[in-house]
Image (cartoon, rainbow over the protein chains, first blue to last red):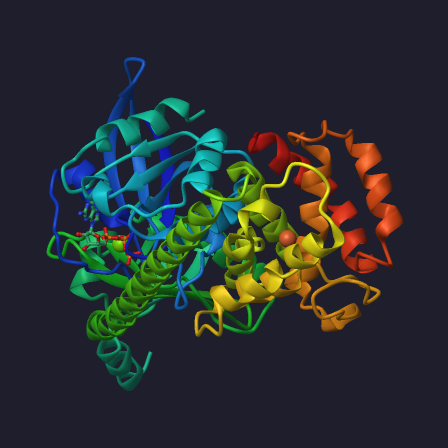
Length: 162
Length: 340
Ligand SMILES: Nc1nc2c(ncn2[C@@H]2O[C@H](COP(=O)(O)OP(=O)(O)OP(=O)(O)O)[C@@H](O)[C@H]2O)c(=O)[nH]1
Ligand SMILES: [Fe+2]
Ligand SMILES: [Mg+2]
């Protein structure tokens, strides 16, 4: 079976692990358990009647204590950039990560997850910045909590993988 | 391997492998159960194909070995799924010793948990700082909004007597803010002048109707009365604790001062005129010239800028006028976005 490596990237606590957990095991936990180190999950998706095994790399968040290790990106066919709608800072970090990844991987497919859509009333992202982002990249509003758009998120990326 | 070395490696929960050839490694010490669960109990075995993460790290390890570097290359922690543990915390290290190419794999066990706890606490901390920042900026935004509303209501009150259009007044704020940004002012200072500048003529509220609303030219005496509007404005805005009102008061007081000292009411000269007032003096004239008024048609921008250029040095601050010209496109955008 065809195997494809994808990565989840973004600031800390935006919901990378939660999105993977929702997608792979249909589970969600409200409690925040940070990820230390790298965990790889697998799930089979079907694109154009062809099965693809997604190797999903959950990379620890970017913050004062952790920066992106470019070696972890090697061989990635695409990635999901996760941004937390309730935290403007996660948008800045996300954009910086995006630049870094582009430098390392070139133009591989990316889909942006604007996560925590269930908390949309608490979203405080800058509208202009968002509009610019949406012009540049495919963006989906997701919720790992309710499961909204999570399947779609992964299948959108899978469909774009070469 | 000595029994002591063996015991130490067991204690450290570390397995030492040496590279043989063709992807084959040889295990140098007793394998621990977690290791056997993933890589099996053969002494010589193919490492690749059992751990996605390690497979990726081997590429870095080979590069490291080939580079002849003496230090240890660490893979960083990763979580592997074994039969008895769905999240086994491991770390690999690549070292070359003489001609031996060594790879160690360590079960981080307790130390992983400690690292996790530390990072967990640190990230909780970062999160609450972030939340605090968001809270503060929300409150600041609320205060700003209130200031803008009060300013808007004052201008509205003045508008009952003065004919000045609301859009002219708004544009004055935006041009001034653009100048502030071009000067590299802080966001706060930019917002202050944006809200304050539209109040520059507030003092006209204190000018009697027969003068303020007189259709023709004012007599010298009448003009003397008209010239009191900066003072009245400054008095209304007063001696405020609120930064934005302070700026507004300065602007109201000094927007008819001239660079060469020929202005009114105080005849201030050069940089003794507050910079916010010097800015408003420029943008007010610009906006008035390029827009139509009941008593005059709109003037083409080119002509307006020529007239303004002739006022540089006597009326306008030359450096600020140059900055205004450097940012003329932004001024035009403001003009076209906020029409009369
Ligand atoms: N309401 C809501 N909470 C979410 C959602 N996704 C994640 N969370 C919560 O946000 C917190 C962080 O989620 P994680 O999945 O651990 O985030 P992460 O990006 O993996 O974090 P790090 O591993 O520390 O980088 C947890 O408390 C989750 O329960 C969502 O869609 N809605
Ligand atoms: Fe005036
Ligand atoms: Mg995580």
